[in-house]
Amino acid sequence: MRAGHPDGSLFPLATWRRLLTRSLRGGADYADPAGLEALRSAVARSAGLSRSVRASADDVIVTNGAQQGLDLVGRVLVEPGSVVAVEEPGYPPARLAFTALGARVVPVPVDGSGLVVEALPRQARLVYVTPSHQYPLGVPMSLPRRAALLDWAQRHGAAVVEDDYDSEFRYSERPLEPLQSLDRAGRVVYVGSFAKTLLPALRLGFLVAPASLRPALVAAKRLTDWHAEPAAQAALADFIDEGLLRRHVRTVTRVYATRHDLVTTAARGVLADRFTLVPSSAGLHVTLLAAPGLDVPGVVTRLRDAGVAVERLAGFYAAGGSTGEPPDGLVIGYGMITAADLPVALDLLDRASRPTG
Image (cartoon, rainbow, N blue to C red; front, side, top):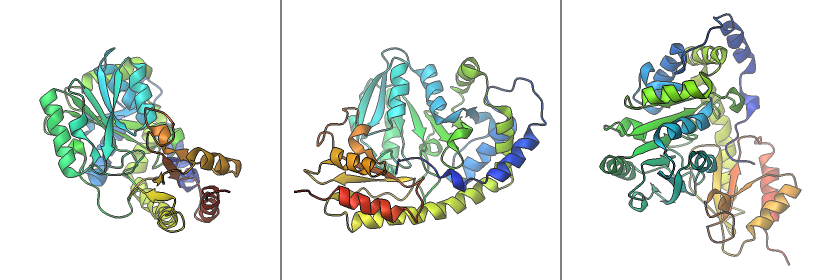
């Protein structure tokens, strides 16, 4: 039950093959580093409809996944010694990307309303956040906290990277407007990906960038790998324009909602004496905070020996994996396990976390 992995069996592979075969009939020349115009237009329309992102085709840069988007932003904005603020706990690959570029990465705590803006270091020139579905806790950033972050960025001359992680799959309330749509000062770079909605192997993502940063980001993309694979871009553009992406997202959201309910029901029921569920109404995982004294490393080991993989919450803190400090618990993904198999896995979790002796 690894977090963040989508169920590839739900992907309409036959339809994708048809679209990809059709797109292969195009030209073989080098393509625009920013991405095919058809895909950039499709992404702008799709993100506008589904997430209220304010963008035209000119605002979009196609990337090889969200991770390349983070790398491109870092190449443009980060110099050796620059301070980059990231969420704590947070997404480890983001920390690694900015560290690799020479940044001094500073963890900033997250509470029930999202990133604690008052704890941001004054010298930070880049802030990385996952406001729609904080990774790994799953809490959304409140509207007042979003406004405070944008105000902070404006006052300190900082940029904000908004990673809209797992925002496509929502099981209850409508999501808040993204930071990008609230931003009036050109401070936010919006990062998206099709890894969760479609397949990670496609390696297609995108940036929605302020006008002031687009030329530098396109130049960085050109120097990095010139452009993403054109045939896949064309196929994805058709997939979006024909309404197939929206239909697919609706279908898989219903599937994932069933799995989400199974996990949360167990967390509030049979597991409630050992774990506290962090409320979450989106994404492909939930987080359980361990009760004091629970041997979380032992639980993870016993589950692994039984063939069930879960992730330890302590591993998402920059401080590492010591029990109790930072807070510990489990991050349980349900993207790659069927609803039929989940009860068995949850029963194994129940047994593995019971007191021994």
